[in-house]
Image (cartoon, rainbow, N blue to C red; front, side):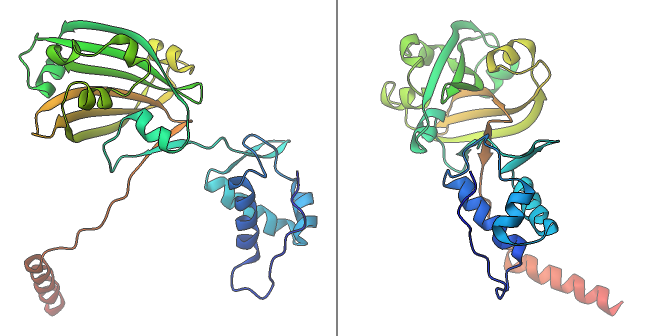
Amino acid sequence: MPIRRPSVSLDSHVPLYAQIKDVLRTGILDGRYPPMSRMPSESELMAMFDVSRITIRQALGDLQKEGLIFKVHGKGSFVSQPKAFQNVTSLQGFAEAMAESGHEIINRVVQMRFVSAPAEVAAQLGLAEGASVAEIHRVRLLNRAPVSYEVTFLPEAVGKRLKRAELATRDIFLMLENDCGMPLGHADLAIDAIAAAQDIAEALDVKKGAPLLRIERLTHDAQGQPVDFEYLYFRGDTFQYRLRIDRERPAASARRVIRSRHKQSTNN
């Protein structure tokens, strides 16, 4: 539904297309243009803002680059389904993080069993290869749609303290801290992209070979001991990991070396 004639300023230092983009972005973010709804056509927007087609196309192009809309040939522009995201600068369980944003989380426990630790798992958890570990597979549903497949490995003694019924309703992190009395300290993450294997593709309702975001996460307790190793597979079309990084300034000694080298190269 087109919004009532908005105003743009010809006298503003902000280009017209940028002003229009901001008006449309606001309409998307505040729900006036709901996810998957069709945006007004170029002709409707031209009339709405009293501007040229090229100006409208610049505004729509920027919204598309930001991932807020997508175009369907012959049908126009549509509002994208917003992705949920988790900030990885703090150590939180998935449900814990999503609940803060008002999302509904459901866990589907695929299996929980005790197995001999594969070499990589044993090395990550500081165990002897072949030691018994708990292996837990869960599908995480975000607002009732599958978003991630999680494979968690825990030392046997820890795994025996977790109850399958509670795995369907709670984050493992919270169970470790509250039920097992194991305050968590930090986690090491490795992130890459892989093609979905058949079983994970079926669980996440995607095609075999579809791109997935894979997170390897090794979580340590407050004393620095590894307690939880996981493979997390996320659908790239529904979820994002976000983080903020700050630039570290070189130490004074390093800055002097850089200036000295620059001075030498200039003299030469």
